[in-house]
Amino acid sequence: MAPSDVPEILEVEAYRRLAAIAEGRRVVGVDAPDAWYLRGGATPGSMAARLVGATVVGARRRGKLLLIDTTAGVIGWRFGMTGRLVLDGVGPIDRLAYASGRDDPAWIRFGLRLDPAGTLAARDPRRLGSIEMDPDQDALGPDALSLTPGALRVALAGARAPLKARLLDQRRIAGLGNLLVDEACWRAGVDPARPAGGVGPAARRRLLVHLQATLGDLGERGGSHRGDLQPERRRGGRCPRDGALLQRRTIGGRTTYSCPRHQR
DNA sequence: ATTGTGGCCTGCCCGC
DNA sequence: TGCGGGCAGGCCACAA
Image (cartoon, rainbow, N blue to C red):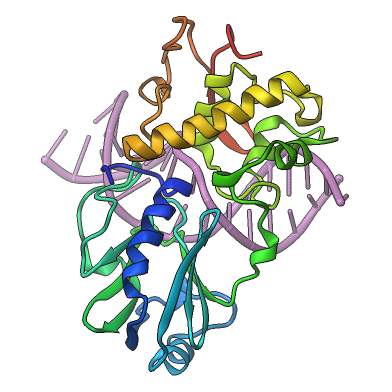
């Protein structure tokens, strides 16, 4: 995959495919130099005691959560916004949008040494990712890559919160992040600040079409930051469609860019 | 329950 | 040239 991606659903899907190479391999060592990175009461010692000797049997993904199934339980792997998954130091994502391409060994926060050889590791400068055994997967909504009209309707129904806040709520829909939502709302011509429950069937249908198209296009282009809006997603940026000065707001706690002219 | 806010973390970039 | 502050966003704790 291409350089410079925030780890939204598309990037985590690339990580899942990378992690799949570990299937059938045995964990022979656990590197956990950063205890802070571990959640759910896990410690470097407990992780090693539990995982060493276990066999990796699968790699799944739900939203932005990577799930590695082993014979000793499920490893939940979160990437925050600067986390990357690397195999022997090389990953599908070369560089993240908010991190440099530099490779400081100190940025390795967690790793699985495998047999046959290979070390699967989290490289995360800002330590916003985390590792948790047996994470609660039910806390996440339906996956964004297989979003259905009904699921979108349920996710938005009756909400007074802004549309964007609902789309970003991982309990409602799992996997959408800030950049993907801005791009899809922009493509759909929908104002992300609209109360979610007030989005009618026509706009909702348009939104679904463009969410799916955005995921498809940006997946092919190589990442969440490859949207048409992205180059103008900055102060003073202009709408690529109609040239209007883009609006910069905070919606759902996130910096949001939208076109005041065609997004209604 | 729903919704909003602030903090976490740290590298990078801009302006002085 | 060095320095300091603002900024990035996924996630979580907490408040109203």
